[in-house]
Amino acid sequence: MKRHLVCTILILGVLPLAGCGGIETALFSTAPEKKSIPEEFFYHTSGSCDDGTLNFVSLRGGGMMLWTDPANVVVGQAELYLEKDYTFTLHYREFTFDAQVFDRKITGKVDFDDVSGVINLENVGTAQVTTDNGRPVLEVQFAKAINQPLLESKKAPFRISRSMDGLDISRPDYCHY
Image 1 (cartoon, rainbow, N blue to C red):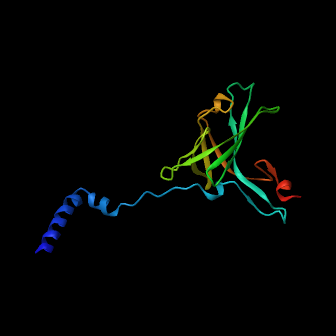
Image 2: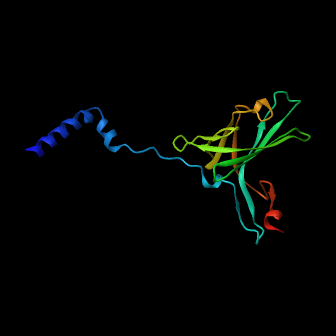
Image 3: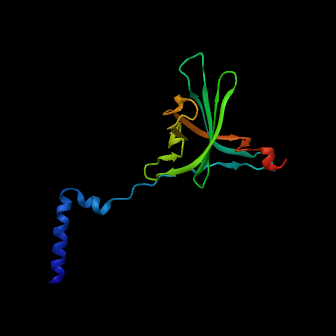
């Protein structure tokens, strides 16, 4: 008798949920898929010193137009070195047609929201992983004017780049050639 009463109460408690779609939500809901920063976005080396194929892999963003007057063209370029300990270095430079006019390295912490996928780059701005022609891209939105006021609020795509130079080191120094 007690068993029948418990089953009846459970059924009556579930029926109102079933009528409004709540039972499916209550019984079959899944946790949101956690997002992650692609492994290849973290600063690392590929290849080897022994066969001369060593490369430094980082993220590079370039072609940031920072002018309003065509007579005073300034373009921004940056390399982003994300570390697995959730720190970063941003090497930011500005160029005119004639010369490099600004050069600064900014370091900070990375705060990553694995639900929304938003990456906060301390003292720089925010970023989000997107794709472009099937390739992963880190789209950075600058929150601060590092040098030029036109950089603030500008978005720039950062793509995976391979170079013979890394952060403050060259291939010959790294490989002890």
